[in-house]
Amino acid sequence: MFIRCKKNKSGSTSVQIIDKSSGKYVLFQTVGSSVDSVEIDFLIAKGKKIIASHGGQAILPFDKDKELAFVDTFLQSLNSMKLVGPELLLGQIFDAIGFNSIEDDLFRHLVIT
Image 1: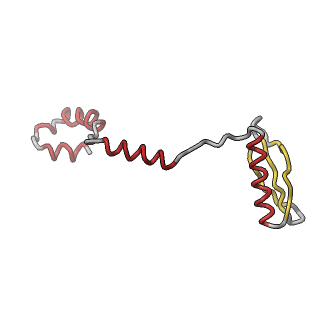
Image 2 (image 1 turned 90 degrees about the vertical axis):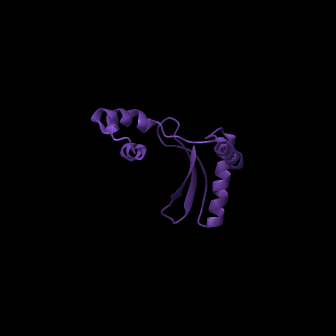
Image 3 (image 1 turned 90 degrees about the horizontal axis):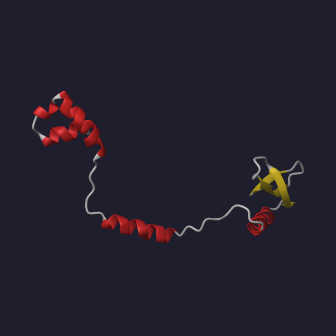
């Protein structure tokens, strides 16, 4: 379920609750209509309360501070980072071509990256 604000021919705006759980847009309830933007905001808030009370779309509880703290802890626990994928794939091609006869690690890393 979601809130739809629809302009009417009279110039007012209708606030509607739309259900799309069956794949089609179905009008669940018209909360009200108004020309005043403050009244429209009130009707939108009222519609959100109706959706919450009827078990509409669930609101996921994200805690941004807790997530950022977890990311910081994870990043601080890393000692080093090494990119292994290109070396495994392109290193074999590098050796097969014969570039490994040049014994310079910098050359190998530059060619593979």
